[in-house]
Image 1: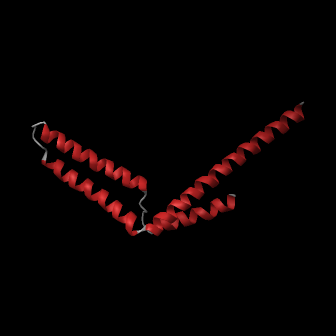
Image 2 (image 1 turned 90 degrees about the horizontal axis):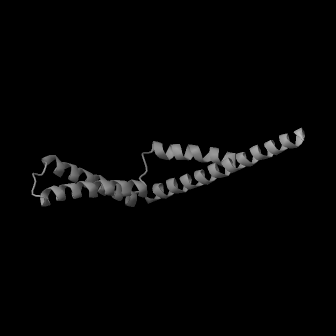
Image 3 (image 1 turned 180 degrees about the vertical axis):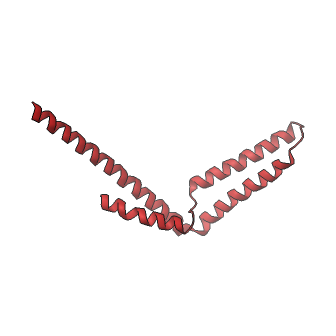
Length: 117
C-alpha cells in the first residue's frame, strides 16, 4: 500500500513538470470568474452608471482564460485522464494508510491497556 503511494508521487511530479494539467475544477473556477466579470459589467451598464473601461479588459481576459482551459481539456484528454486517475489513486492510498495507522494506534493502545490490567 505504501509502495503504491510512493510509486504514484513521481508520476504526478513528472506530469506536472510537463506543464500543469487543467482539471474540470479549473474550468469551473475560470468560468465562474468570467461570469462574475460579465455580471459586474452588465450590472454597471444596466444601472446607467459609467462603465469602467478596465472592466471590458477584465471581462475579455477572464473569458479568454476560461476558453483556454476548456480548449486544453479537449486537446490534452490523455494527460487530463492520467492526472485524474493518479490523483484518485493517491487519495485512496492516502486514505487507506491513514486508516491503517489509526488501526495500528488503536491496537497499541489496547495492548498497553491489557498489559497494565
